[in-house]
Length: 283
Image 1 (spheres, rainbow, N blue to C red):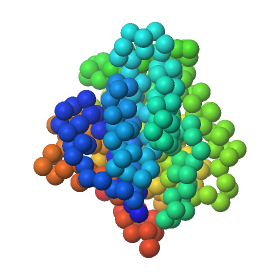
Image 2: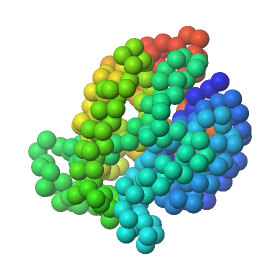
Image 3: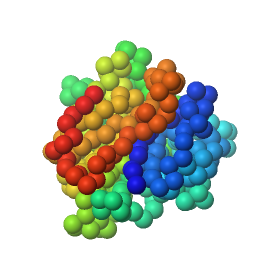
Image 4: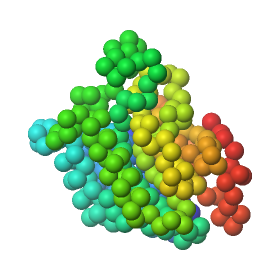
């Protein structure tokens, strides 16, 4: 029984959609979808229907692309309302979301904890104030599409929504997480600023997470943290915790000849000798 992870499938691209459709079945295995699957609800339903047939259990956390408002009705209701609709859709297919009870991975006993946080522009240089972020990013044309595609109502702003999400998540984890549980945390956005390394668009960092989650891997006893968003696949280790960036990416960013299975991350390759020290950093 394997635990696989992948994010940023972006199946609105025909190449990506075709690859997911062609993926073989893993009837005994679990799959983590780390967000940015698509923008349209109908496409996400197609993915949930397909993946729940190919895998025994599926987990999903939202990325920023799922929160984009692509219809007039969605624009009127806002991104928090769309998120609620996506959670309801996931539950229709038995997909585990950040709003659902946590499950224990039976092979190692880890508690799998999907979470949903956003960003508050705190991943920015120390000499750039909050009110300078947009001008600073615009100098290199790096302002995120979220600024027009996501509407945070009834929250005042995306960063206000993010603060609420972080507080709600902290309260739930502090209250309900067993004191002896070892965890696998799942979030679309990196939990730590020092994991954000995107040389091609360095001024995109303010849209990549929040410093509020900096110590969550320690606070909530994570052996593995899964994220995406950066489109920079790799493994990094901090404080003996393994951080797995599992993005597939846009069509130009991966090799179709290798097949999608090549890009599925096997989070625990050898459970019989599971040891965090055996997983060095890789890029």
